[in-house]
Image (cartoon, rainbow, N blue to C red; front, side, top):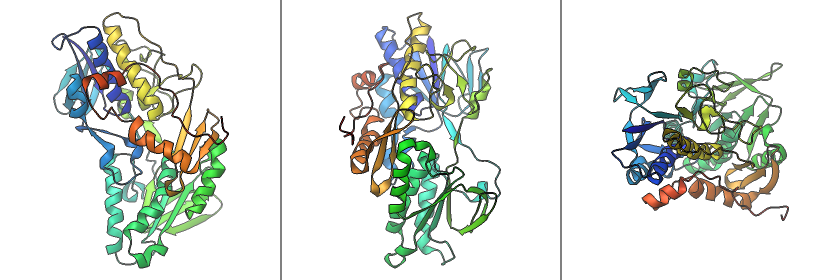
Length: 410
């Protein structure tokens, strides 16, 4: 029996598995002739980009509801090592799983530098578990004694995740605390860059205004020097600021999963493996990679970014191409000639940008409506969950940019 093994059930992994199963079906391969196996520690697919939200239950998709109709087999275990010479993956549950083709889709993880107190005291929304832990902590705040900073939250890192979380926290915390204490809620966002959300191009001033409207305090040009159970010390090198806070959330950047280093390749600075336009890992036979752990020149010039925007199509093409490669069929190159960014700004709305320079085209409630569609529909498997619908969604095509009502009228 021929076997494609996919490691990881995030955006890239799930769509890799579905696309490979779709191609097997298209090629007329029966279940006793070819199979797709996906290795994942949890029995669900996490819509990770929504971890800044609450409640979190809608962010989980049970894998059996998606894999069952398509015949993909789940090995619920953690992949611990890859033997690309002997074509096998070692797991902590079922031992070794052999493959004819492998798709590495292990994603990324939060970078945690060696900062005093960070490991012990910081929360994060990197994973479903981490986001649940943060919410459980917030729920305990009203029952605490009244130390300085009981209702103060500091978000460190002003990339998209940090901004989206900071915009959500003021209203989210006010819903938790007693009415008499709601004016004590304080949210601060800090980043070492000269401006908060500096990478957001033309949307940066709008994001800054939105955060000010939401009463989020901005600390640009400030890095986390240390933290303890009572708060943080921020610094810009010339001065320091102590902020008492019972809640500190670290959003300090991403790096590819360490499992990517198991392959005999040179990783990029983000720990990603290099892949060609067909998603084949360069220099490693029979291995493909997709999503946050892979670096492809997405438009022939610029490298892919760690986002579901690129992870989902990378997965669809990797799965299709792995199946094609296995049966000596023509593979399809992936190229995406558009790029958008939609940043949620909580009750204020959202911003929508186009292009690598992030030209602002929509904002406020108009952009928020687009964000709701993306977060609630576009990035999910088909809700009807039939074999036909899932295979149709797994076709190796690049979706058009998400529509929005443009402020420029175009």
